[in-house]
Every structure is written in structure tokens, then in C-alpha cells.
Amino acid sequence: MLLRQGIKIEAKSFAMGVRVEHPQSLIDSIQYHGISRNEYLPAASYSLVHQVEGRGVYSFCMCPGGFIVPAATGVDEVVVNGMSPSLRNSKWANSGIVVEIRLEDLGDYSKFGELAGLEFQHQLEMLAHKHGGYGVQAPAQRLVDFVEGRFSSNLPACSYHPGLNSSEMNLWLPQHVGTRLQEGFKAFGKKMRGYLTNEAVILGVESRTSSPVRIPRDPETLQHVTLSGLFPSGEGAGYAGGIVSSALDGDKCADAVAKYLAV
Ligand SMILES: Cc1cc2nc3c(=O)[nH]c(=O)nc-3n(C[C@H](O)[C@H](O)[C@H](O)COP(=O)(O)OP(=O)(O)OC[C@H]3O[C@@H](n4cnc5c(N)ncnc54)[C@H](O)[C@@H]3O)c2cc1C
Image (cartoon, rainbow, N blue to C red; front, side, top):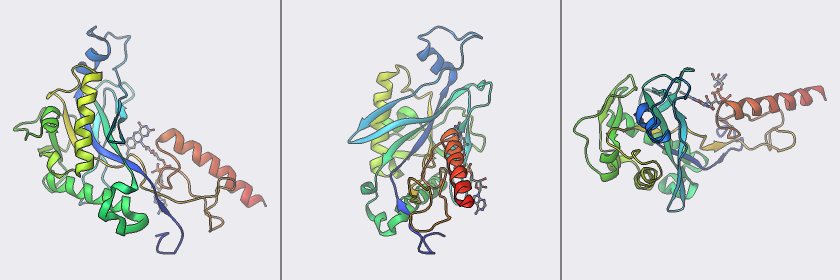
């Protein structure tokens, strides 16, 4: 909408990949070194990062004792995300595992200019819809099968309610995402012994970790660089990622708006 009105926006780097789910008991056993979790220990979490061919591959929004949930906004997309209830008491541990995407990775999509990342994101979400079976099921593969490039003839139980459709994700994920994920998972398996297992399943796609566009603003006034009175803020405008940073950015922008109106 802003672009159509000739209001400047810009493409920015972002990240996308898959969501992986393990039994929580397995993550507990790795993180608590085999000691069984008692009522005083929380469901264990993890944070993983590895560099593959100049790009970060990392865990994002790890949800101990949580669920994988659908997060698409269109009928032709499948997008997954994760959440934990406050008790963190489901039997699953899930996390986004995403690859950093820079503008130079977008190849042919550069013809979409500032919207290159958005277009790339949408294409991948439509591919997930197709490989999930054109419904709300998510395409999925057992973790070791994904890393070794093998079809999963069956899938483990999973917290994702709409259901799973077995798919060789490495065949349709863009190569610069798929191969980095495979290498990343191998490295994670060395950092957390037992993590790289076919008891785990990956679902596609985790594509909404951060905004692929930014609406540029003046760092002092927080107003758009050319349109005064417009205060780009929060995650969609490219200034936050997650609940707390979005809230803080909103607070900062509300102060800037109040100052602007008082002049
Ligand atoms: C399933 C799920 C789990 C998540 N879990 C976590 C977590 O555990 N921790 C964490 O930090 N983050 C989490 N997030 C991310 C977090 O929700 C976002 O980072 C945060 O909500 C972004 O805040 P925001 O204010 O920028 O945008 P939003 O919260 O998306 O708010 C934008 C608002 O604008 C409204 N809007 C949109 N278009 C228009 C329009 N044209 N006119 C009027 N209103 C409009 C929308 O209805 C919405 O209310 C999760 C997200 C999802 C989907």
C-alpha cells in the first residue's frame, strides 16, 4: 500500500526455515544430563547457533512444553509457529530453526525490488501449502531423514493439530536454505548429543520470524524519512522482533507522537 503511494520502504535481511519438534523428555534428558526432571525443574529449553557458508543458522522462539501452531494469513499458505502455555507442560519441545537470508540470496526475486523478500516468503509458504497437500496440514519429515535426504515413510506423533503430510523437504526448500539447515542440524547434534534423532520431526515453513521489509524512519523524530506524521513502529515496520521489543518500540513511538502533536 505504501509503495503504491510512492512512500519509501526498503528490503531488509530476514530469516526463515522450519520448526523442529522433539519429545520434551528427550530435551530434558540432554539438558539435565540424564537426571530425570522433578517438580522443581522447568521443562528444559535450548538455544543453538551455527555458521554455515557465511550465514547464521539458529534456533528461534524455542517453546519448551509447547505446541506447534498454524500461523498463515492466506488460504494458499502454510506457515508454522510455536507457543508454550504458561505451565509449559505439554510433552513436546519445539523450536524454529532458521537460516539468515540476505538480499543477495534472493536471486531472481530481486526483480520485485523492495518486495523481493516478501515475494520469496510468499512463494515458500505456497510451496509448503502444496507439499502439505493443499489444505492446512504441514509438510513434514523426520529429522535424520531430512538431514540424509530420505523420504519419511511414517511420521511421529506431533503437537501440530491440523496434521502432517510426509514430504521430502530438502527437494523443494531453496537450496541455500535446505543445505544450510541440514548442516546446521548436524552441528546441533554434536552440541547436544541425542538432538539429531528420527524421534524429532521438522515442519515447514517457519517464515515469519522477522519482517523482510523496513519502513525507514528518522532516528530522532521516529517519523518516516519523507512523510511527516507517519510513525513506522513494531515488527511489521522492521523495528522489533518479538513481544517485548515490539511493546517497547510502540511505547517509544507513542511518546514521539505525543511530542509531535504537542508542537
Ligand atoms: C503463534 C505465535 C507465537 C509467538 N510467540 C512469541 C513469544 O513467545 N515471544 C515473543 O516475543 N514473540 C512471540 N510472537 C511474536 C509476537 O507476537 C510479535 O513479535 C508481536 O506481536 C509483534 O507486535 P506488533 O505490535 O509489532 O504487531 P502485532 O502484534 O501484529 O499488532 C499489529 C496490530 O495491527 C492490526 N492491524 C493490522 N493491519 C491493520 C490495518 N490495516 N488497520 C488497523 N489495524 C491493523 C492487527 O490487527 C494487530 O492488532 C509470536 C507470534 C505468533 C504468531
